[in-house]
Length: 83
Image (tube, rainbow, N blue to C red; front, top):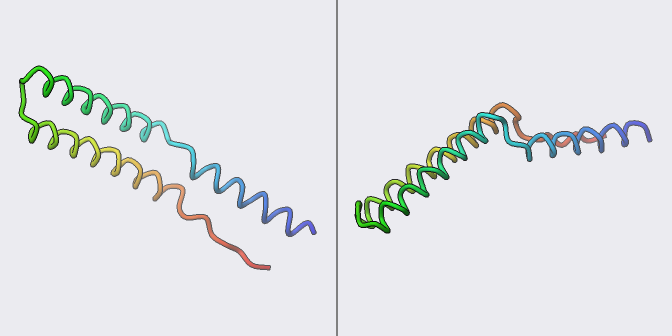
């Protein structure tokens, strides 16, 4: 029974750690959101074309994806241990 409780606790801890963003991931997400907002504003005012705005948004998505991958490498996958 204690082994089961330890396994459940470890799994819950692993899932909660995987769900939390690191400070660097949070910063990257905020930076990406700022880029997307800037692209929308520039597109709305006619300063850039739709294609240029799309390009900026793709770059913002790449920033977010990269930050998420970095966090995933640090936390690693939650391993399933069997009894």
